[in-house]
Length: 163
Image 1: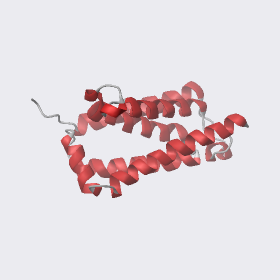
Image 2 (image 1 turned 45 degrees about the vertical axis):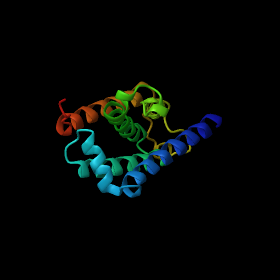
Image 3 (image 1 turned 90 degrees about the vertical axis):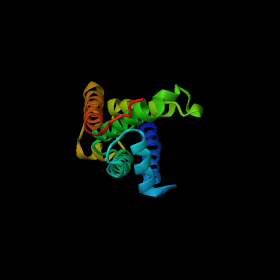
Image 4 (image 1 turned 60 degrees about the vertical axis):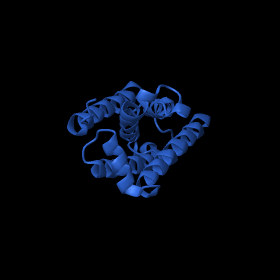
């Protein structure tokens, strides 16, 4: 039971963090238009579409993680979002978050991968529904889907500015 409470805590923090992140892209600062301009500045075509895709993905994945529903797929969504953020926005700045580096997005991605492997625990919709995809299968699904989704998004929409 201790492990289940720990997994619930991890899911709550990770899920709420992703929901807040998505809500900020939607309603914070420059709202969806500003988020769209920011995505465009990273070299992603159709910035407004990218902004909405990130909002739906982050809020949706966050809600699924909190509920412990379809956990490997929800974790795949977080990993993919963090891969895109890490590659396009943070990698050029180095590791440390205080220099706008990829430290934070790496932690969220690895926690998501670990959660996919460990499973959501007994206090989850997956458990109540008898969905048990954990271990290498859960991790493989999460990482595989994330890498394919990230590659697809970048191949379709990323057009970096040549210097």
